[in-house]
Length: 365
Image (cartoon, rainbow, N blue to C red):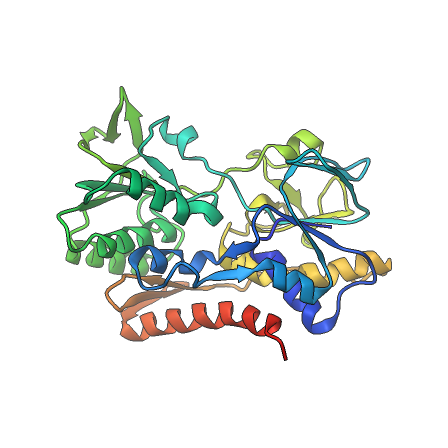
């Protein structure tokens, strides 16, 4: 059984289309028939892509992989009895299970309750929720605050600047005390700061909070604020811990180098819902994508009852491409970084190629 249609499970399905799946009946449980590619979301926000670009058809992909698709979500799991209960109350049994459901929103837990918050998580419905907010708030927003200093927050700040370029909207990026792009190289942060200044996007490296109904960063009040786009990373869903799976201190499923649950080795997990315990692997789409082939191979081994499980070994450094929405992007690789139109063109080529690769698998011959 596959629970969730995240980027790692897309890799599993693609691998099984190309190489053939295990000799077992497999069910994929996902609440959506499409998976949204996270790398193209800022471009869609900016208007560079139409809504359907960056969507991958799970129905067609599962059919080609010989996998049954159940459009539902996992509500509870019993790893001892090897059953899950879906949101509609159905009980589904399994022998071997892989989980890639992504994370859940954490903005309200971090910032507090406020109707102006639109959390990036869950990623699959972010664009719809942003469009719903814009429909319910006609006119051009006066002030948008982007919360989050990682790559996602930075790209969204630039994307929103372009989306509302024709109006008088102000965009403010609030990173938190960890600062701007603290998980990437110093040179990357320097280039991002310059671009934020060039595009007139103020940067505040303080923690954002909601205090007596007002938006505050450090000691600075940011009101009036029309919208808060929160890109604060993922929180863990509750049901893995409640079901008895071993989790880390933040509630993410604890896995080994083979992506197996530390408490239940017949269960694998990858993507934002999982946390490697043998080494630090950041929650990133880059790693989720590369984990797919490892999951596909290990599921075959578990079904066949053979050894030889593969390990996901992250590269020493990963290439990150941060679009600045000016036709350019910042390319970051370890301590090295550069900016230019070539990087923007490379990002668009990589993103489109990745999405198109799934479409080619499902196109009729």
